[in-house]
Each structure stands twice: as structure tokens, then as C-alpha cells.
Image 1: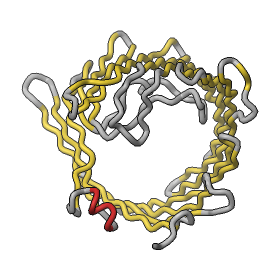
Image 2 (image 1 turned 90 degrees about the horizontal axis):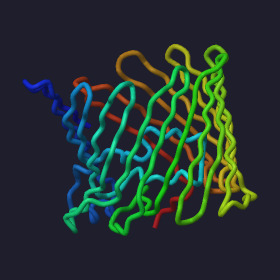
Image 3 (image 1 turned 60 degrees about the vertical axis):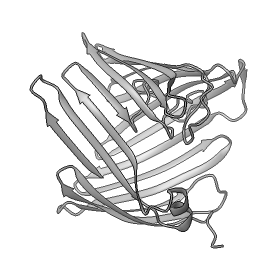
Length: 291
């Protein structure tokens, strides 16, 4: 990963971020046209105190200020695509706003307008998000072509951080109404959420809920999660240790979407300085089989 910035004479700051992906098997090499190194991610930016412009692998505006209260089925904003995103941000009077388009190189057009608005009133913060429906079909990953809107409010009261959120996807008629509460106990923070799921105003049997317990003190971090989402149980147990010399080691076990199968990983990061870092991970995924 490489990041570079330069201050311009007119008060603007130009920035560029590039991430180089190393293909690790023959399938990746074939998909990348035989190249072992692929500049798959980039972000170009032009920023000032009150306004910013981003182009590349950056988040659309719809979910920038909306805060989901756990896993919400109606919260299906586009968060990623194979195409670049053009997004503008502006701050005014304590309020923040954004607008974005996905740039379709093949059609030489801008697709899926998304807007976001966020701010605070005293101790209460709020976020709004909207994205229009589109026929843009070339994007993959976490792209959703449907119309989506969401609103969230939150704040901290007597030490507890509370988030209330509502999200709806117009085309499917799916809505989510959720609450999430986080409370710290010294170095431990417990977070629980519940999301009521409905389709066309009718309750579904599989509401989503979960609890997370996180410990962080000095160089040690440990997180344990349990959740029931889309009618299936999932859990994670992960930890990290900061060695104090720029290196952090980490390990974890996960049970997600696979019944009784458990995946494991161990790895580490190293700060190379100048905004560059190195990540190395070894993982065992029970879904993968040789041949």
C-alpha cells in the first residue's frame, strides 16, 4: 500500500493512494491477464477544510453517514463495485453532506446517484442516506442496483451508546427497524443489537440479533462475537498483540455461513513508515478443497 499527499498553493491538498495485489494462484493470474502484480485499488483526492473530492475505490455517499444498528436486511446500500466512484463531500454549519456517482467506463456514463447527510444536535447525532435504482449491471462485489434509503439517530446517555436505525429497500419491500446498545466496563465493551425484519409490512420469522464483547488494554485486544443472522448462528473469536516496534500479530477462529466448519487464521502487520504498511496472513478455510 502506498499513500502520497502534496499541499498546493491555493489551500488544497492533493492525495493519491494505491494498493498492489499479488496474485497467489493460477486463477488470479489468468483473471489479471497474466500479471502477477495488479494495481487493483486506487483513490485520487483533492481536499480542503470544507470540501473534498474523491475518485476511485472510495465509498458511495449513501452509507457514509447512516449508522446501521447491527445487521439490517433493508440496509443494502452499494458499498463497493468493480467501477470507480466519484464522490464530493462538503461541510457547512456543523452539517456534512455528500453526493456520489459510480463511473461506468464502458458506457462512458455516471450511474446510481447517491446522497448522504449527517450532523448533530447537542448529544444526538443523525445520518441520512439514499441511493437511486439503476440498470448499471457491470459492477460486482457489494453493489446493489435497487433503490435504498436509511435514517439513523444515536447518542451516549449515562455511559451507554445507543443507536436507532430504519432502512428500506424499495424494490423488495424489505424494511429493517433496529436498536443497538454498547456499554463499557473498564477495558471491556459489550455491544448488543436487535433488528426486526419485515417484507411489505409483514414480520419475518428470522429477525437478526447479536452480542459482541471486546477487551482492549495496553498491547492486547480480544473480541468475541455471537450472532443469529438470516436464521443461522455465527461466531468469531479474534485477538491481537501490538509488539511496540511497528509490528502487530493477530489470530482468530471464525464460524460463518458454514454450519459446523471453523476457519482459522494467523498473521501480522508491520508499519513501514511514510503511510506504507505490510500485511501477511495464513488462513485455513474449510470451504476450500484442493483440485
